[in-house]
Length: 127
Image 1 (tube, rainbow, N blue to C red):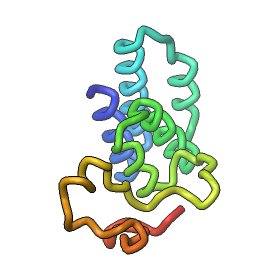
Image 2: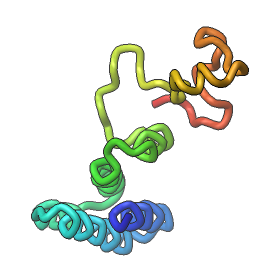
Image 3: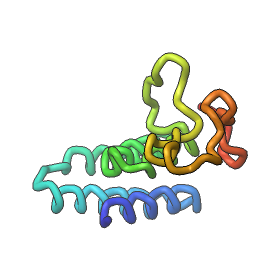
């Protein structure tokens, strides 16, 4: 996916630290979104061009979340960075995905929900 790759690159450039590269990659991601969905994101691209520091990373992750909406990678990004700043449900964001009913019916090795860990061992701390 063009937008996903561009926003991953934007996040990497931000961490490098190369903010001009991050801005350019994020704007490329917006261009991918425009091409895919036929929408105008020029205002968002102009906003990104004027950002630096934490607000730049927040906007990159916000746009990446929008581009990956309903994709499990958006959930993984949120667990890793706590961005975008969303209001979690009461009780917080689940630390791991639950086993589906088909898996539960066909795999007798899955522990009951009460015996499962709240988070995977390699997950970052909750937001």
